[in-house]
Length: 151
Image 1 (cartoon, rainbow, N blue to C red):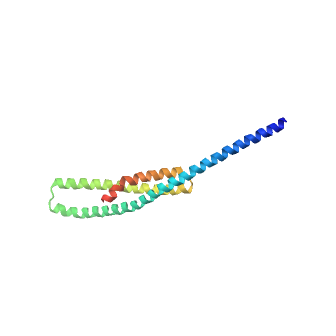
Image 2: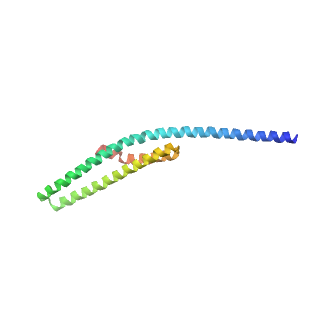
Image 3: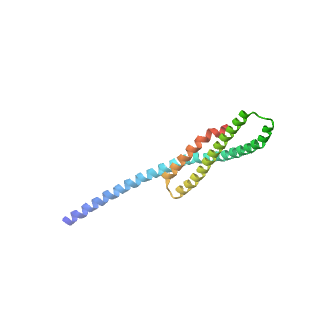
């Protein structure tokens, strides 16, 4: 009788363990479905942002062409004896433009690095880390989104 009682007790414990494992599996399924939904939502905006990166790259290229043009014409401006204040202002604007261009290029480079990391994280099924990368990319893209339309 004691042995039968122990077997029943063990079967009862095993049943509870299986029941808890089943609950846990159901919760994990819910978490996985929600993560996939979040990735779908975030990835769409991320890939839209990547399209904006191409626009940024074109704008940077145009800015570089403008800087080259300005350098070419700097000699001509000196021939017309621009006053020294105008020269100082032009140089200040150029410095700001170089700085802004460099920042944009650094952000583009960061986005490209994050894109590679994102692909690896998705391949490795590290969904939570992938969502964090997408969020960081979205912040960078949103920071320059208004500037794209202005240029």
